[in-house]
Length: 84
Image 1 (cartoon, rainbow, N blue to C red):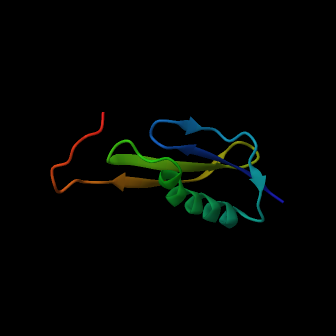
Image 2: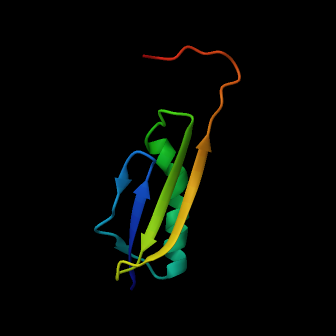
C-alpha cells in the first residue's frame, strides 16, 4: 500500500510530517488532505482575522503530489475591545 506524508502550515508554524501513513490510493491521500484543512483553525484559535492554512502531500519518494490551502478571513462590523 502506498505511503504518504502530510506537511501542514498555519501561517506561523510549519510542520513537516516525517512519519506519514499508508493509504490505498492517491485519491485517498487527496481526501485526507482536504479533510484536514477545516480542522486546522479549530485546533488552534487564530490570533488574527486573516490566515492561510495549507497542507502538502508527499509520496514515499518525497515528491509533492498534491497541495491545498484554506483562507480564513474574519471581519468585525462593530467596534470591539482588544484583549491585551
